Length: 413
Image (tube, rainbow, N blue to C red):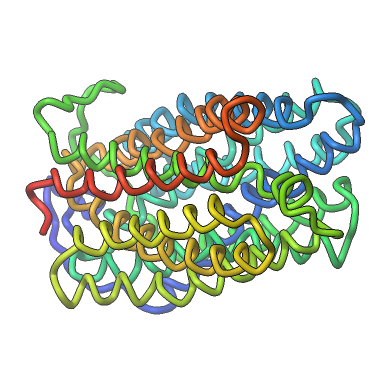
């Protein structure tokens, strides 16, 4: 690995990472996304519905929106702090990332336990808000592993591997909370245990370069977007595509129950998640690998947006169970390519090596803001402005606009 500023931690990586390292990062991301998406898509909706309160869609939006607001603050802050961390234990220097990942995992573990016993809406809201503290500490530091250690020519492939857990985490979590257990409380417990088992091997068996005596910029969360227009456009791309994802997935359980009118919406949601995952796993690694081989990124992002938009339009035109299955497969295929290739794009437009985690944290604000804004837009659309068909039209337009925004990035082909 090339060394700059006197430390490997700030070097531009040139040595390809091994399959073992990729596998351990894959597992850590699987634990993270399982602990995020399983509550978001299954446990929280069921828990709020079990309270028997009116306007369950609105309250779900409020709970998840507050969590997303927490994420907006925590992600770049945790990234900036990890960029500048020089821990010393037992007379030796340790790396700057793993200590934060471990702390985030512990916070998330404890908050999942709180959610398991939450008796009312207040404690559900508090538990999920604080869970997002742990989630976003982990997200900032785990995502930084790619620019920290992976050469540019390998980033599409690696990004494809670590993109797959976004869907697989929900599948594994959904199977656990619908077959192994069947109610929210033990569901949170089993997800919490799975989180620790999946993250621990990455922390214990992979290197984490210490910052050493390398100079780092003064602590700040400011970012010169005018001076880094490609980074700004990468943020816009991520924001719009993730907003489309939030609009299209937040109310899937209620969509199946109230619009498609299936007999068993929880089970059928699991089927859709499985189809989504098949599409995503089938394209994420392949899309990333092809973009590495071609030396091009943007065309893959554009076409992924087109496929997502087609899936959303199908749901808008014909909200039936067979169409929902086809749409889930297409949505997963498009989103798999998008996550792999767009992640590689982001790592290539980061402004400074010394601020990698902070800048990635700024990028990660985009899905957090999208998650917060999604319910604000979706709830009135479903209730007053055309229902689910209009919601999926909005999903299509937003996703396609985000994919096209990548064309404004000049430094990446």
